[in-house]
Picture 1: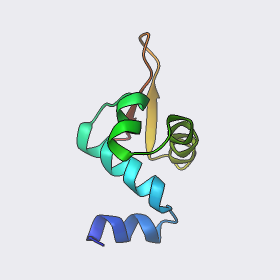
Picture 2 (picture 1 turned 120 degrees about the vertical axis):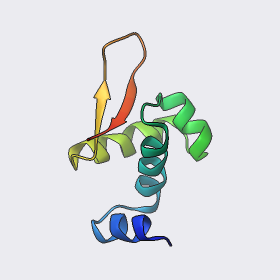
Picture 3 (picture 1 turned 180 degrees about the vertical axis):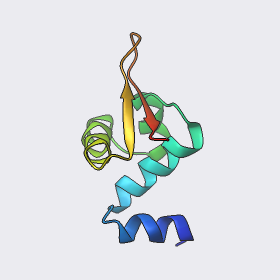
Picture 4 (picture 1 turned 135 degrees about the vertical axis):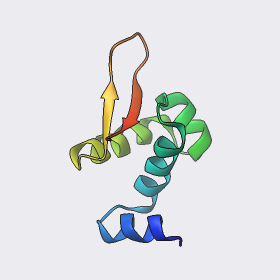
Length: 74
């Protein structure tokens, strides 16, 4: 477990939340379908994990276009 993962774990994030959040940080802006493929997590689960991350103030949703994107909070 690296320092970022430890910090996120200390903040109360679960394993799936950590995986998803790290991918969102890495890509900067990512659609749920790609996130699902990269994380190897069912897309339905991605939406619920993203909701938890959004509720914790770690990510935001970009609903400006036809596709939903997740972005890290700056």
